[in-house]
Image 1 (cartoon, rainbow, N blue to C red):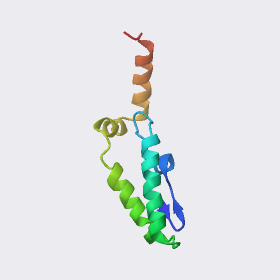
Image 2: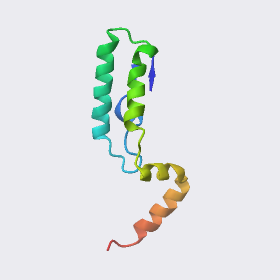
Image 3: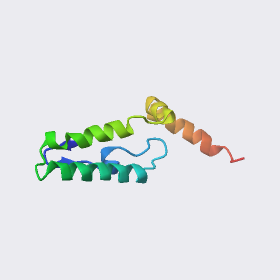
Length: 92
């Protein structure tokens, strides 16, 4: 997520909700964390100076909803099969 002179923010940082794909709020929040880190770095953008951003993102987005945790445990092939089954059933 960070390296010397590099910070990944928003979708690039992987902060979007894994189940819904929604990520505007998370992108804005990660952008605000990035901005604060950039200001605090005072022009020195080494990896160690950008580490507070990575730590802040990890702390802020570590508590993924249970559905997201479960979704990561289910193999993609199983998700595809289940999605196909659900799409064949008419909505009630």
